[in-house]
Image (cartoon, rainbow, N blue to C red; front, side, top):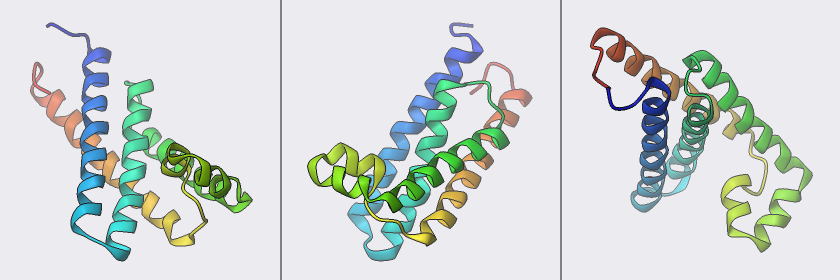
Length: 135
């Protein structure tokens, strides 16, 4: 075994984060309108989920999903203050991370993203348990 479990989990999480960003950019490149927007919302939460795993690699899927959805909801609700919109006008990074304006349907799509990420996480954990040395 070259890497311990936590290191391997962090490598998988970092890879998942990169794949998620690429998927988000890909969706924006090939789709527009609501499809791109709501896919982007779901992928935003998938990215947050991957970052949660990067920080806490042994977290179980339900807790990671709740954490990712809660963080995504917190950012969305923070948009009600108007601060993310103001900051986003001066900083591309702030706009990408915090968004700009509150949109209630986004809350649903964050749950979709968290659920999808938890499902994939659970499947990967089962594969890992069934075949040690893999994944």
